[in-house]
Image (cartoon, rainbow, N blue to C red):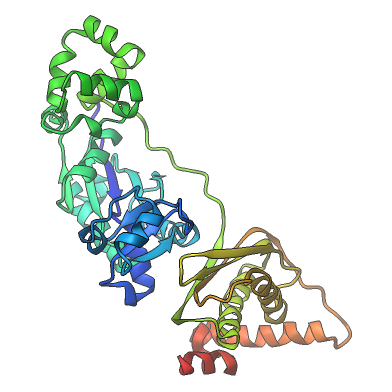
Length: 390
C-alpha cells in the first residue's frame, strides 16, 4: 500500500462557535441552531448549555419552546457559515493546494509529499489548528492517516486536538468502535441486519468478513464495501472543488432593535464596504442578496443587482432591498449582504458635471483615504451617530 498523508480538519459545533464569535452576548447562553422557526422546524446543532437543558438534535421547535424558554433559537445562517468556511479554506491553502471541503465544517487536506517541506506531520497539524484559531477564533481537531475514511473517523471519535493512525494500524484502530462510524452502515438494510445480529463493534464485523460468501448472503451488494471499510481501506482521492466567487459582509447590531434610523445606518455602512471592494476589483455585481435576521429566529431576504459601483448607487439599492424585505415589526439582530456574478466594470468619462459623475468622484476621493488609512478612517456622521447611541 502506498503511504499517503491525508488530514481531516473538523470544526466541532462550528455553527455555535460562529454565532458566539459574532455576538459575544451568546457566549454563555444555551443556543440551538434550528432549520426553521416554524413549529415543525428541528434542531440542527446545540451548545453544551442547551444539552444540559435536556435538548437533543432533531427535536421539534414546538417541543423546544415548551421545555426550555431560556434557550436562544437561531435559524441556520447558511450565508454566515459559508463565509467562515471560505476564510478557513483560504487559511488552509497556505499548507497545501489540494483541499476538499465536506459540508460546512470539515476539510480534507492532501499533505502527500509535504513532510519534506513542512516537517513532522503532527507539528504541521498543530500549525494548522493555531492558524485557524488566529484567523477565525474557531477551534478544531485534526485526524491524520493514510486515507480520508480513517482521518474523518479520527476527528469524530477522538477528543485530542491531533491524532494520527499510521499505515497498517487501521484495523486495530477501528476494532473497538461502533459500526455506525462506517459510512456504509447508514444504508437501512445494513443497519437493520447489524442490529438483528447484535453487532456492536467494528471488530465483530472484521471477524465476520473472514467468511465472505456468507456475508454476501447477509449484506448483498454492500458486503464488499462493508469489508473494505471495516479494515479502513479507502483509495478515494482528495478532490478540490469548483468554488464560486462571492463577496459577503455582515453586521451584528450591538443590541436588537427595530429603530429604522439605526438599522438603515448599518445598511449604509456595509453597503459602502461592498462598494469599496467592488471598486478595488473594478467589477460590478449582477446579483446582490440582502438578508435580515430577526431576534426571534426568523429571517427575510430580497435579491437585486447593481448598475454602478459608487457609494450613492450601491447604498440606494441596498436600502431599497432592505425596505422591501423588512415587512415585520420584530427587532433585527443582524444584516448580511452577499454579492456574486461579477463582471468587469469601466466607468465612462462624462464631459458634463452630473449628479452621477459627482458621486463617482466623491467615492474615488474617499477610496484614496481608506486605502491609505483603513476603511474606518472615514465614515458618515449618521453611521457614527448610530454606533455611539448604541
